[in-house]
Length: 447
Ligand code: UDX
Ligand code: UDX
Ligand code: ADP
Image 1 (cartoon, rainbow, N blue to C red):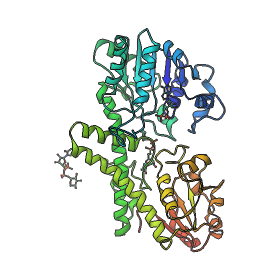
Image 2 (cartoon, helix red, strand yellow):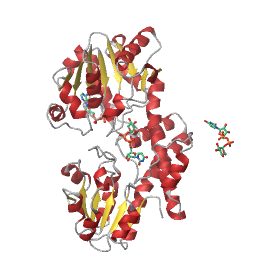
Image 3 (cartoon, rainbow, N blue to C red):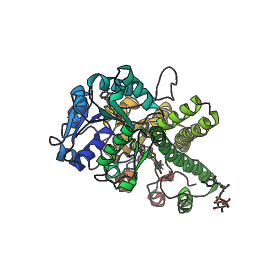
Image 4 (cartoon, rainbow, N blue to C red):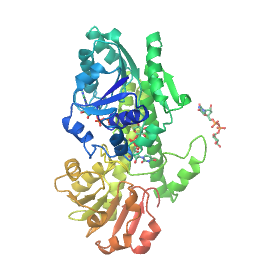
């Protein structure tokens, strides 16, 4: 059997590496038009940082795992084709700022239709709006090849930073397909691939639309939990309650559960905002403005949380940041990834720059050029947390990297301008200890 995945990104790369690892008899090819990206996948320096990924790629590359820019030939020889290209939010025209850009998906559908003359299973792996499979199908029909393809939806639920463990031991695998005979057969083929390592009871099959919608809804619910606890963090700060005590107390209710209740500077990542906007757009499109408004509020609350954090920094530094050095520790949208998409740090840094701050950023994984590109050429990049904090008026923790917990804060304090402030936007530090060193310390959701 041959599998081809179009799109060598955060989803396609790790997912195909896992299939190659678990199914040595299946040839897996990951193809992408981006030559630089493919070259990186074929080098010692992979284009994405993901714990455990490098080992798997090194083990299978050159055996049953290939990374290539030869898109058409790999599509043509594959039995199963995954579409795993980006679906960013549209920034122009109808649906700008909400609807997803489906141009890449359409491009893939056309390439597949042009390249193939035999039967194939085509799987949507990218997060797509409900009824995208219909778009793909009508492209195939346009080439009079609709009968050749069975279109399935198999959304990916992996989270960045834990992609390998999520893929190896998923909560569930979701496969949506048609209830026709050929549809059922295609679904079974894909079930059999995952069933090599995922227990059958964790593989659920639905119709295509339920599968597409479930992906959006899963991300919307997760993001909603973060916005909910962040809303409560604002109440805690003014009322004397402690958001971690509240989260712990409610999380022990088995109906609520303990996960995803960590208050923060706000959620980021490529999926949450995009998928909610997608849901908002769909709801509006189907004439359900109240539903659209309900979900939009999750994003409004996220923006509020970022602004609230920045306002606290400005207020604590006597309402002026002009010429003050501010050390920003962490730029990725969460720890253990080099991904900065929609990271809260981007928005917070921009707001601080607007206030005239002199920003110095340290992140253990994000490249310097990328930080500058997303903020300003004037942003300084440090090679360590200590270097960033030297002569700073304030330290801001914006990503929860483990190394920030273990820093020698007493030494950092000595080299800072006094009063030295620390704002823990991830609640990873011991504030009492910091205050005993001399810091003016604050975090999220505690007065
Ligand atoms: C609730 C809390 O569950 C309980 O912990 C608290 O002490 C008091 O308030 P109660 O009002 O008795 O308890 O009922 P509950 O089972 O929570 O249901 C509340 C409402 O939500 C009901 O109308 C129920 O039908 C509805 N509900 C609940 C749903 O519509 N869907 C659900 O999935 C769950
Ligand atoms: C998410 C979903 O978890 C995953 O299932 C889906 O396939 C893709 O989108 P990801 O974006 O990689 O994954 O990261 P996730 O761990 O969900 O975190 C998203 C954001 O929420 C991060 O910025 C994180 O810091 C923040 N977050 C998460 C919180 O602020 N508090 C929490 O309790 C959990
Ligand atoms: P995700 O996070 O969903 O994996 P990424 O943006 O990281 O998304 O990756 C998507 C990849 O898909 C990019 O590397 C892009 O070059 C690739 N891509 C987009 N359109 C096509 C296409 N028509 N053919 C091949 N690759 C494509």
